[in-house]
Length: 196
Image (tube, rainbow, N blue to C red; front, side, top):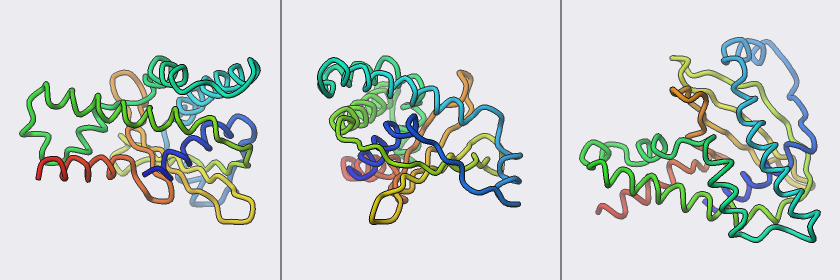
């Protein structure tokens, strides 16, 4: 799971420095037509805010401290995520047996762990090239996957997938996966271990 967060951090910090679109082809064009307009703008907006914060902290003499980063993530980046939705996915069938207080605690725990890990890793990024792929809609059109490759010198790319859904408040991230390691699946394993 740590690789997922590190890769996510690298992506967030490098997207603003160089986005390179993947080659277009018939499949990419079809996927782009199916994806709702502006969903990738939602992710980019959040990334731009994060990059601005990191650059401002560096301009003041170095990387930001983890507490300041955590406060920023909760205040500015948190609205781009839906941790209740993520908790629902992570709990799976257990969700129906949980009362509202248990559900809220699970969502808060996921948010805290996700952002705490992210805050601790964001100061370690290096400028890397990004291949950004066209968003792809799910069959029902209610979810979108945004795939991004972080190009690594001397090795293969880190493959990231952001999963978003359209809710009442617009597009929200509910899962991030790096090289097929999903944050939601990580939390699902934690929930199962806890409930055994």
